[in-house]
Image (cartoon, rainbow over the protein chains, first blue to last red):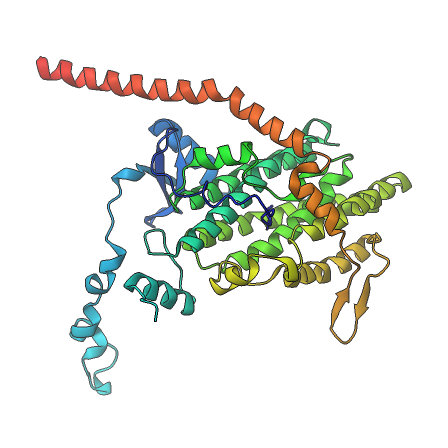
Length: 115
Length: 321
């Protein structure tokens, strides 16, 4: 269920919902689910739990209620290290100057057949 | 001329290309605030929405219906969790969100401030309330914020069961005794207008719609979504042999849409402002559950700290030996 709840005039909450940095509750975990054998674990979402055992149990209840997986990883969110989105262009631009990495760069005569 | 930063340009390019904005991208503060407010309200609605239904768990008419109702309510809890997680990617903590709900600074859908008086209400909620939710959430799968969009994809996969089980309850009642048919009609009479109000105020009075559409947070306006819901639902009501409580409802051949009567917006605002039939009880129950669970949250942390300390001692002991 859901919904679009309008703001009530005179109840501006903008100042209150400003981002806060710390959380005093249970730590945050990232959940990765292997959909079936032969596939990689894929990020499904996150959840809060006091320890690794309850994180795994909660992950089962939250992310695999309908046979979405056969294996779950949980990782403390703080342990995930990521590339900077602002460096993405420089980091992921190999095609522009290295087209020879791709098979279509090479011309093979039709007579040779599928390669 | 205003100075445009690299972040702003990148944000606008992403929006224009119908691409998704991700948590660590630069975004305007207004975009972040709008999303926090909207996603939090959506999450709160899922969580508060468990209350009107849990009212009927012990009185479900069969073991099958009881099991289904419990599964549906568990899904609502799950939907709340997907949404809180999406909101947290915007830099707000779970505790803050919960606190804002408990202190009335953030809202939830007005629909959950109505009481569930009969078993037929379980059917009507699944059919109409979840039906309305689906219309909104299908649109929100296309929202510009990645984590919100992914949460909606997950929600929508599960929501269809909710609507179908509700419609099936209505079907059973409407094919039953005269008393059962009367229950079904009574529930439709009470839930029809509040369901239409779920889409929010008319576009002419919706303060956020224009900006939200520009940012592609919303992809359709409140009135367009409401029209889509009415068009979908009327044939379903006719199939049940039930009558929607609106004397002005008529198929408009030119528009190829149903025309429907005026919504009582005074009622809507009264409920939003906290004066609906169940507002106080819903929040009291929610705060009570949170306070009753305090010792569990503390015990779980204490246990995890003890376990970690024990593990460290074992390592020390091995090191010493």
